[in-house]
Image 1 (spheres, rainbow, N blue to C red):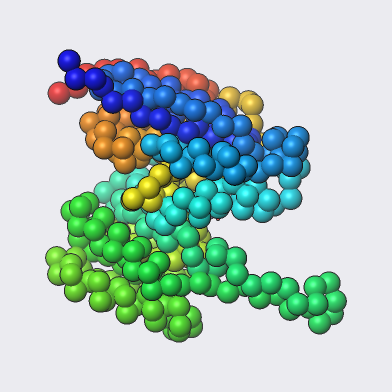
Image 2: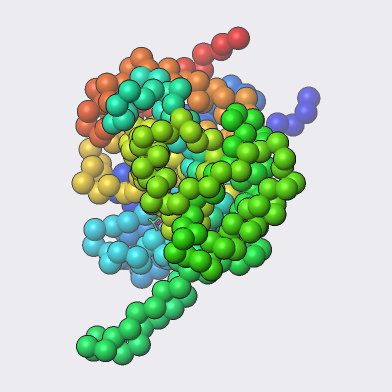
Amino acid sequence: MEKSKVYRIALIPGDGIGPEVTNEGVKVLQAAARKEGFGLEFVRYDLGGERYLRTGETLPDGVLEELRGMDAIYLGAVGHPEVKPGVLEQGILLRIRFELDQYINLRPVKLYPGVDTPLKDKGPEDIDFVVVRENTEGLYASTGGFLRRGTPHEVAIQTSVNTRMGVERCIRFAFEYCRKRNRKRKLTLCGKTNVLTYAFDLWERVFHEVGQEYPDIERDYAHVDAICMWMVKNPEWFDVIVTDNMFGDIITDLGAIIQGGMGIAAGANINPEGVSMFEPIGGSAPKYAGKGVINPMAAICAAGMMLEHLGEESAARRVERAMMEVVARHMRSMEAGKMGLSTSEVGDLVVKYVEEDRP
Ligand code: IPM
Ligand code: MN
């Protein structure tokens, strides 16, 4: 008999509700692996606010080196009320994205049947698109600094870095993804060409240049402010949206709320040639931590994205089908405390459907 594949997954539960939601994700992953006949070995890393407060460490170099050797990383959340904002985000989350060159942040915006959207008269047939966010450059590159800090003549400079290489690989990924997705075959560049006339001049030129190689994909453009309006008014227009790091950060929170909120929004930090990281995008939500009321569905969706990325497509479909059943048939709301189920009950139900065999 062929020896079954075993994937090594770094598990970083992190802060706040991170451990609770990744627990449920791990249960679902293990059930899917059992059913589909592959193995998962989780290597747990204690990173986050507690460790930082205890030892002063965010992401030790030795851990980073170990992460480089994993098949994937599964992350809960980072952010701790007693730690100054930025320390953990930059020291852990952004450092992993940058060091592992996870240059794509892939964020599906999909309204599942049975989930409430705040958009009037819109349903699952209208809200189903994917944002491809550049994940290693732009304003997040953190270039700049202070001059005369703390004085009345203080200057703070933070510049957006856009390299030809970085923009091109992101745009190329988006075209490829759009082709593979094979829906509307429309790629929308989201920018601000009327004001950011250097950065988005580059983005726009690369978009049309690379686009020549994809005559089957319709090219579309929207300014970032306008897209915030269209995503609310006409979400059905979109198929795949490609944008820079900062705009991608902002519009995917808007995306998350129209797909039912942070309880169900997941994302993937992808290095197509390296190690990728999968996470619910909602943050550590410390006020809900330890209460068993948080919705683990976003973490479960992130787990599904991880399976897909590992090439376990059948397992990924199994997880998506199961989560759809639970969402449509068992959950009253996607909001913490209003689900009508506890965190682990949601996970258990998803496991139950994962274990069911369907034609
Ligand atoms: C996200 C988050 C992060 C970001 C923060 C926590 C650094 O908001 O993943 O969208 O800005 O990228
Ligand atoms: Mn964000």
